[in-house]
Length: 176
Image 1 (cartoon, helix red, strand yellow):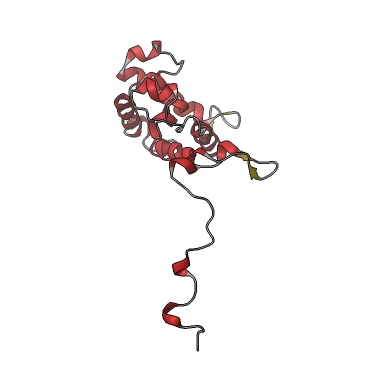
Image 2 (cartoon, one colour; image 1 turned 90 degrees about the vertical axis):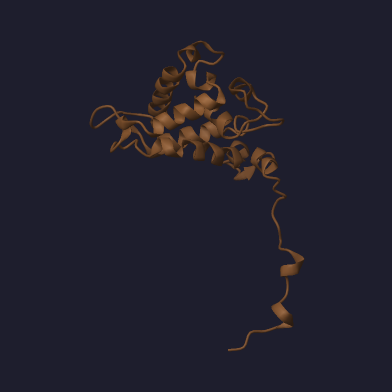
């Protein structure tokens, strides 16, 4: 489900993007592990209680089940695609319809999950452009150049621009 969402947010040349009918040359959200960012965020932010006081379902499971239901209501044949998750089997426009239906679902109004669907595409895009996939928590360093840096044409850390160095109008000091 979440790889299908990552491909929706930032298509690449992966099989999830090709399945949805919208892809682009090079890596995208799937290769950047945007799915993991979404799942970890949902699991941390919205554990879904089954009964009190414990245990709770991971928030990502609850949202995935809701996306599954909406995907199947839009296209029942999505259950028979190449992926086990019907949402991942949908075409791009069908994913948009499923996400919109989930966001507008009356079942979520005034529930603690109400705002989660609204954040799904944003989280997936954030994950695609983040360093998460190549960040080593132990060493606190990147193990490779992040995919998002290439997607955004990020040139790396800058020490400033020559035109911004010095003082405006030749002023060399500030006077009180």
